[in-house]
Image (cartoon, rainbow, N blue to C red):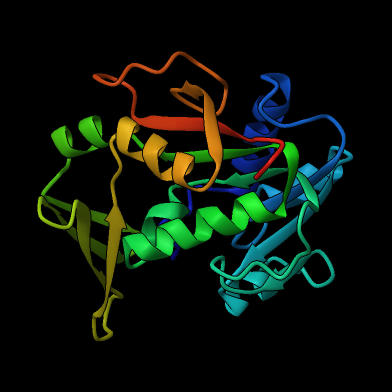
Length: 231
């Protein structure tokens, strides 16, 4: 059972179509899908005619997506592509916030800026901190196909991270446990991180369809940031 099974290939295709229709993704050009996972956005980008390449640290996800030849296994803090390679980079589904420290976040953005062409842009999809904290569910228990999924969540104000503990209980088998920790960024803070890397925010939307961002109500913040000519 997948914890995020609703994040399906069909949803990925729809979201890529939204990104292109809204002008957040170019219709042509070279794109890097950073932290691409099994390629649910990467493959539709390529199907749409983009020269799209992926990067992820998980060999298991890359293999499951059959991404040999179109994605590389690497750490996003050391992107194995030459300077000024890409017209656009994407980082979707809050994967930016999973890095362990803010030094790591700065390193990732510096690498993104390095591999973007002058004038190239980053599309960064992240949770909207205000709404995420307000609507955080401390406990949820779900039954799926004879399995039990129990999740506890809390927000740590000192580290500014959502901490999730997941217990996955297959019927008749010992339970499995795992831990997730995601750093949240207020819009102004995220803008400052991007600026330090030489990326200037040009737009912020409430979703991948370029809907209006409202800090008090939007679940997500989709930030478009552009590399200057001298970065």
